[in-house]
Length: 153
Image (cartoon, rainbow, N blue to C red; front, top):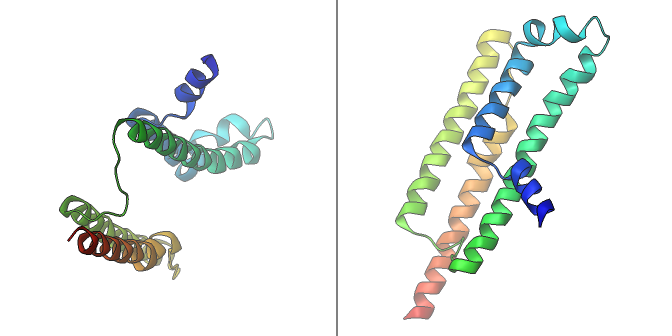
């Protein structure tokens, strides 16, 4: 039982852990010449530390997000049944907000790279989210909800 509490301590994602991880990532990734270069360059470990942090923090956040989702799903199964694909007005609004956010972030990243670095860089993550993942999820939810509604009647 002690091992589970240790796992929860390290991998159960909270807003505090998320914000601290993102701030550390931003400080190291975007301001590496000010933050970690003076410390680790004389030791010859700058590249090692930079790549460990650049890869480690996103990997930690993804593992924590997955662990938290699994733990919450287990707790939801114990308390009540919820359906991931059943469409509600709340879920529709949240999906719409996430879609608009993905479109805006994709365009902001494109404009940033074009304006600052003069590079035409197509940002793939939010583009894929806005063009494929969210519309497919919404269509699947709509079809599933309609089938549930027809079966109910």
